[in-house]
Image (cartoon, rainbow, N blue to C red; front, top):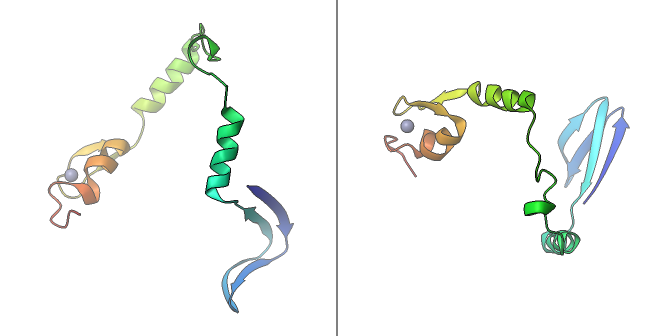
Length: 111
Ligand SMILES: [Zn+2]
C-alpha cells in the first residue's frame, strides 16, 4: 500500500464525468492498495520466523507502571454506556454491539 498526501488549494473526484466529491483548500490523499492476497503473502513473509511469545515478548519480566495501570483503570471505568432502545438495558459499547441495538432479543425486527 502506498499513500501520497498532498496539500491542495482544491481537489475533486470525478467518475464517468460526474463529480463524486470535492474539497477546497486542504489535504488530498491518494491511496494505492495492492491485491489483498499479495499483501497477505508480504505480511506473512515479514513475520515468518519471528517469535514474540514468552521470553521473546518485549514486556517479558516487566510490569506496567502504577500510573499506567491507574490510567487504564480510569479509562475503563469512564467508557460511555449505551442504552438499548428495545429493552432499556444500559451497558458498555462492546456488550451493546454484541447483544443489543438491532440484535436485541426484544427487537421485533431482529435479523
Ligand atoms: Zn436490548
